[in-house]
Amino acid sequence: MASALKETQSIKEAVTFINAVEVNKFSKLISRIVQKLHLKGEKTFSEEEEEKLQVALSLDKRGLNLVLETTAFVFEQAAYHNIKPASLQQQLEGIHVCPEKAEVLAQAWATAGPDLVEKLKRNIFAPKKLDFVGWQLNLQMAQSSQARLKSPSAVLQLGLRSEDSEAQENVFVEFNHEELLEFYNKVCFCLVC
Image 1 (spheres, rainbow, N blue to C red):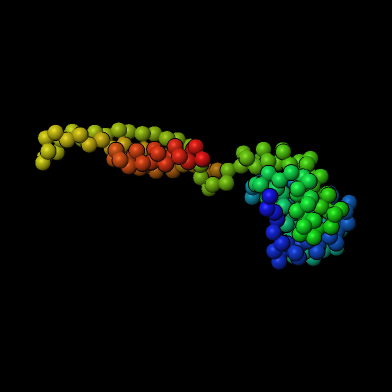
Image 2 (cartoon, rainbow, N blue to C red; image 1 turned 90 degrees about the horizontal axis):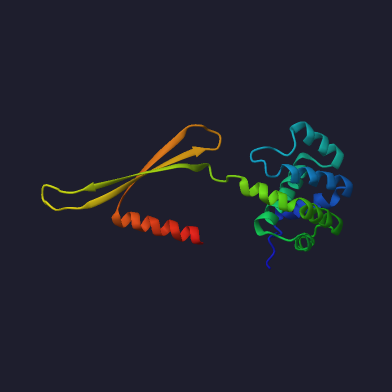
């Protein structure tokens, strides 16, 4: 399996800071990151807590941000790629994370990973979700130039809602027979994949 963790310049820098942090302090830091990772739009630490962490971990603001962002990224990649703890540890050591820190990350993933994956599955990553579907079928039976015309058209009403809003936005889409069939086939194909 190809490594989900690539050694970019930013990760190289972060690994240097991660390797410099004391193992016990790093373990507590990781525990907090894993607990809060699924909360969208919420910072793991407050500004005041980050200032205290800078002193406790002997890091500047940029170094601390690199450590926090990179460790969160590691867990996000582990969740996305469904990486097993032993494989995660190997991949971390492959990007030069010291074995003790790689083990701490792998153990945290083994303990909290399944629960984190379930919480992340429930998160909505799209800005809007489909909340309502309505439809209407129209049938044009005649026209001034044709007495016997049967031209069906369907109108779909899609009710979209933002996660942070109660207001529903309605989108109306009109299809003729061929367009509706094409839309149906695309939706069915996406659901099968």
